[in-house]
Length: 142
Image (cartoon, rainbow, N blue to C red; front, side, top):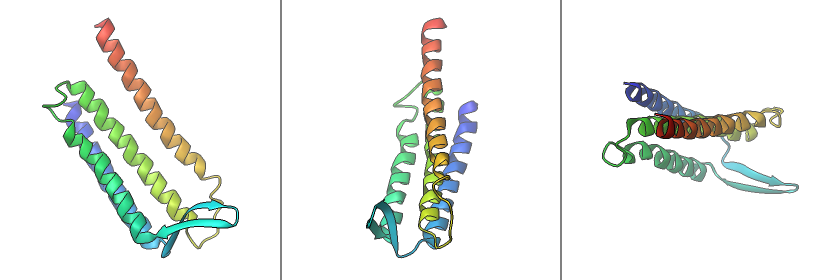
């Protein structure tokens, strides 16, 4: 039952990530700065950035279907993996928003917003460690 709830949350996180990607894409300039080293800027076109991120988002989310009942019969492991994909979608939403914020024409103090990326990575790390601990608990103590 919990797997169905997690799958529903996963689907909503996928929709939110897609909506956020399209929203950020609409607000980006033609050349998107992806790295800044002093006086040199590394930039790509906004279409290239959109399709690369769309491909990454699609590839990560299709893994939910790859690790289905036939490949991974343990429902707990499938539930944990789907939760990990939800955490990745949260990270993608934050990363898309950060790229949009960095490339906006408004004046923001984006340096302090970078901590949110680390928080999303911390959530992902906590999910991995917690899931690993739960699997070890189930294996050795039950």
